[in-house]
Image (cartoon, rainbow, N blue to C red; front, top):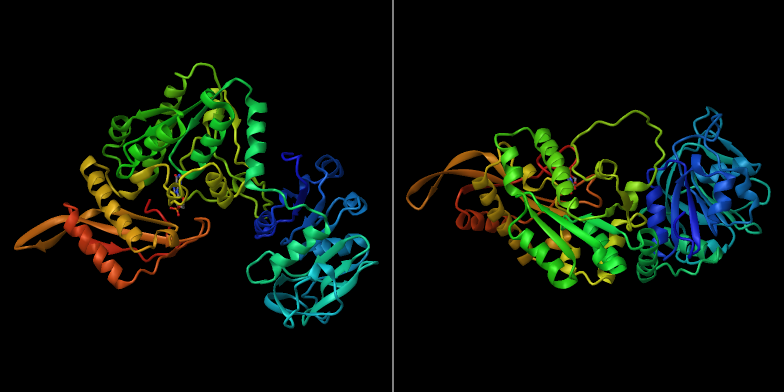
Length: 524
Ligand code: XMP
């Protein structure tokens, strides 16, 4: 258990696709919450965590199935406010003495419901303050089963055509159960419902980034004492924020290593190193290992082989420099909350590897280091907020993500220094265009890929035979799915002209209009 200084809310995860959104909504209300899979939540766990309130998430199972997930019985006798959502509602009804039926039972009044629905109020309820001011409210339903008999003590407060028990509550015990998903965007008043719930549960709403910063500085000092920490700095937001926070806590006992693999963007190494040296006075090793990386990549064109080589060399190089920091016992990593949530998997079986992601995951075991992960409780946008709190420049915080293997995976086919140079220049022009047109912050990620083909062109009176490149720009929330960005034709035309005029070596520009899936964001 991590934060014992703030009131905690426990989200018991029954495997819904949108459980993380519940946590997002609560964090927006400055409420500290943790998601735990139902298998881990025992009575002992509850007594140790001492949550102030509990939310039961949705899930894909059916409570009518023998052996389906349940909450520990003790939960309902601890005097805690509880909110059950969808499957969570059905768990509450089933365990508290009501009845749930499968929606598809023939002749049984099937009430499966997926998508938009409208809820009509019956009686006023504090959980619904701010609702129904202009009539029925839209909600998002996604359920096969339905509650057919309420548990003793519960009353109905809202109904929808297919869910007579859309909103129910036992106000004496502060138990609430809704059939729909208030956490999703398509339930427009959902955030208000959560706000009401945490108010009824007595949360102070005082979990702010300022408080988090103070708490983490204390926690890092407690963990590390006067021992030494090393940190692989990539120039991305996560590792940068982690490094600055740890630096605030332990000063010169932190050494950062910035590995320059020769696959960075134009001026990137100078900018990152300059920012940390000038603004933060951090101990920073700038490891220029471009000859090593580019040497080993020479002649390699298979994407997975490239990734594996870079991953292996990165670990070797980092280890070499870390060995120079005498007595280092800890490795700092910018691990985020979505990476650590132990999600409930009903599919089983290993998923297919699309790409071997580059990270420093194998390092701690190999080097016998303990981990310091001060961002483990945060979502990406919270890391950005913490970065602002720590004084990182806004331009740095808003930077597009950049993959660990860098330009290697934006250079399909063989990687050569001249091709990398052309790619850097073209990328710089493209990003400059995007910034000039005020589009940078609307785009999740934008970059150029240099293609392994040369094409014929005509410039002035002469024939050219140069590389073609592809522009990529996508919108996304988390990088898992993405849409191509709908630039205007004027923008694309102007950008193509600038790249061809300003970047020797390129005579043809294309725009990639593939979404993800079926494409991926990077080309390799
Ligand atoms: P794909 O290409 O898989 O990329 O759609 C999704 C997001 O992940 C980034 N990416 C990486 N990030 N190490 C990273 O740190 C990697 O090996 C890596 N490969 C892809 C990519 O830039 C996009 O934001």
